[in-house]
Length: 279
Image (cartoon, rainbow, N blue to C red; front, side):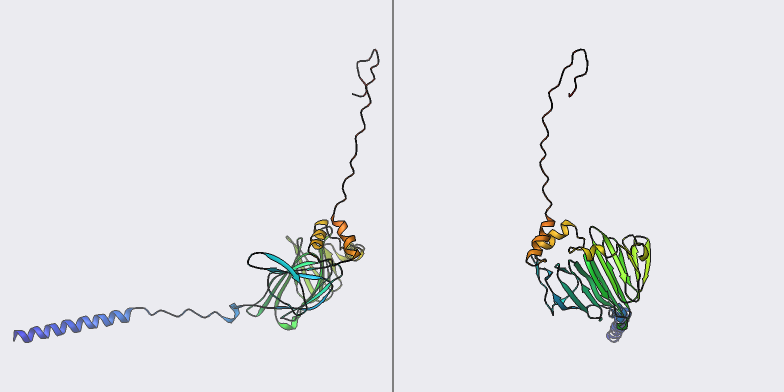
């Protein structure tokens, strides 16, 4: 009898312990799978294609050890952080995956800071170091955030066509051909519509009508500073020929003439005076 009771008690203890272990397993929280990112939160880099190149143009290729400039060719696929430099008789046309088109004009250094799809919005930021270009933004491709950043101002697209230029000597200039563009400099803003333009001081078109395009059209270098001209000559962006020699000479400051000071006239001591003339 004692043996039977012992066996029953042992069986009951085993059952209690087994039930407790199962209950403990039931209380253990299950690991939840990480939520999948929403479509609106996804970031997708986009590609820019070189459609046209006339003249001498180069792009900067960043390698593992160094950086080098290579010739820009039709059909090249460009991504973010690409820098382009055009010569003095050059025009480059870029087509963006969202059907936007950017025409880079002569004597220009610009870069593609970002070109990506963030959810439903296409985000594009171009940097203009100097020179001029004409961006055309396509509204039909969907919502977009298109900006051109210059050292003195930022132009954001609210429409389609804009001509924008910047030089170290004359600052920035913009003209709207269609749609609307918002120009920002610090806390100051100016909205441009078709036919309106502004400069780096955000002046109205009527105040700068006479001198707005003079630096770019009247000067083969586009009003570039000597440092900018020297950079282009050193990187082969000017091509070859007499024009290159003429432009290259502008990047080298003329040496100052040595002026020899005349020998001082010997002092004449006049009797009876306390002042020696000429000393």
